[in-house]
Figure (cartoon, rainbow, N blue to C red):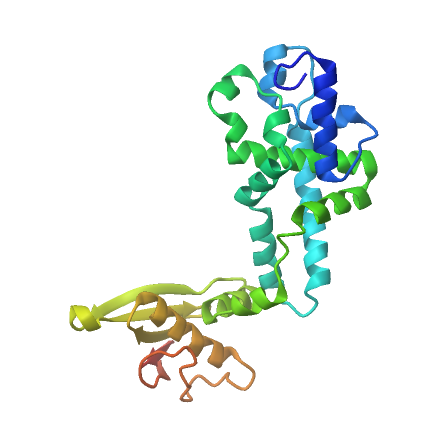
Length: 271
């Protein structure tokens, strides 16, 4: 039973609507029922009912592989770090919960009375887990090709477009992508000081990369200063830009000219 509905005809109609929304028809509807059964419902019934936690575990892995494969195919020239960021955005809890609502999962979930009273039917974490469980059930019922097909349908409006991806590649994003791939670490930004009158405040940012390489840049806002420092780091990391003793242009539009200069074990960007 779903949502304590005894009428089998109505239950069947609800399952049919869900399968149409998924563009997939289950051969074993018991797998679908298990995917829609929360542990709170099974525990209250004490009838040895299957619930969806194990299917969620499986579906999480299936979803990640489907998304990874599609991103790899769509963006053949994109670095691993950026692919990882795009995948994280697609499989985050909020995104999955939105898709669960779109296909009507809240209406067909079997929840215990306690979970129901606490608003579980509209909780993002519960809905995203349920969607992963459904994908796990699809995989067991029809194999990887079936799961891939359902993921393709669900995520069709969400795949990043190449034009959007290019626009999003600001200096900070590019630097994080490169440093994660090259050093397996993220750049660290810190506000060193701010100075000047309130109407013309200047913020000075210190950016540190792996190995103690540091850059400083100023800007009219913290974000502008961070972008300026990231632009200098990108110039230093670019092919032919490895000599950090050289003057480097400020590619992020910061104020004034900037220069990287050695100071002890640090590389300091001064602008």
